[in-house]
Length: 164
Image 1 (spheres, rainbow, N blue to C red):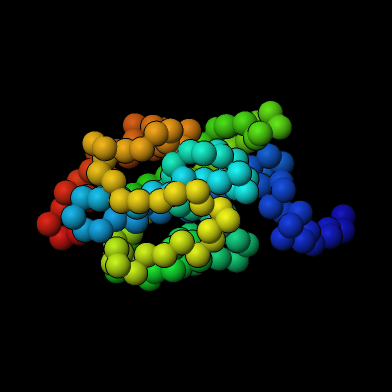
Image 2: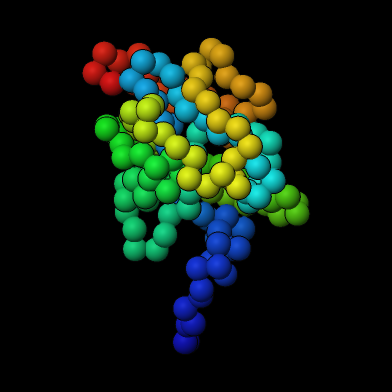
């Protein structure tokens, strides 16, 4: 059987729908208990108007850590000072068109210098800011509570750690 290599645009359309997608999710933090979040604009794939930490799809041939570092730089223009892999979870959702989708979310805590954070894709972001876990904006990304249920204790320990 002969296979045809798909373009990146075709692959992007099918990620999570025709096959399980892999996303690297990064929770940028300042080392003092605050997390940087952005509010997704209508120009994003989905979750319009919801707050999320940041992330992006894994590209073929790229390691999960390379993907996280690339996405942090692309979205927030900052180089991580420290990274910790938190873990993964299965994200089961529907597309805006009602199609079931499945993503593996590979989650990282990423310490950054808050003074260096910029929004490099302003068309994708309606708002952004620094928040504590007990004072989060609404509405949050549909998968945030799933993440917190699976990895919340680990994430809270990282945010509270003196070696952040």
